[in-house]
Length: 66
Ligand SMILES: [Zn+2]
Image (cartoon, rainbow, N blue to C red; front, side, top):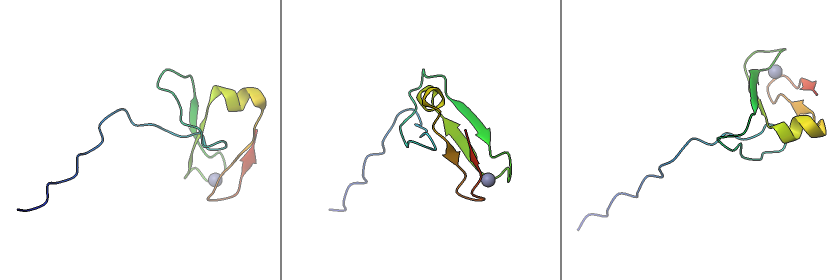
């Protein structure tokens, strides 16, 4: 008997905050923008990160911003 295929996870795509790595809730007002320096990396920031003033860092060019 051939093995059954693994079930696929189904649900909304969850994005993660660039700085804190916390998942962004679907109803949360998070910001998403491309890196202002290289324009290649998409930075995602939750409200919490913005409120706490946590800086993000682009893994491609190393740009850091508040
Ligand atoms: Zn960058």
